[in-house]
Image 1: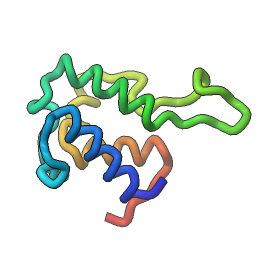
Image 2: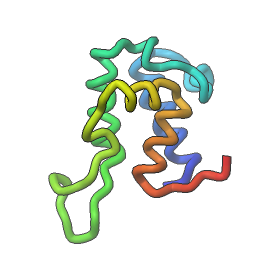
Image 3: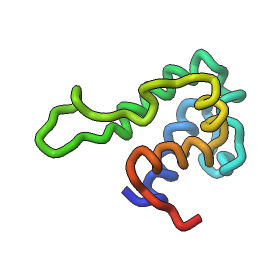
Length: 98
């Protein structure tokens, strides 16, 4: 995946969850506060399913997920749209030129 593909997919997932237009989701938009911490946990589970990284020859159950261990520090890092995209890109090994 490219940076643009990750960004588009994340913005789409957030816009559906938050019921807002994708254009309203700038990099500094704090989706965590808009969604609430409890719903954010469910949302990150959906993100895990969408961005699972599976090594060749393995099944989905053996894949690595971007958010397997989520603590308060991690939640603060991904509280913005840009932070969430960056964390997913790091997980996928994508180096954006931003």
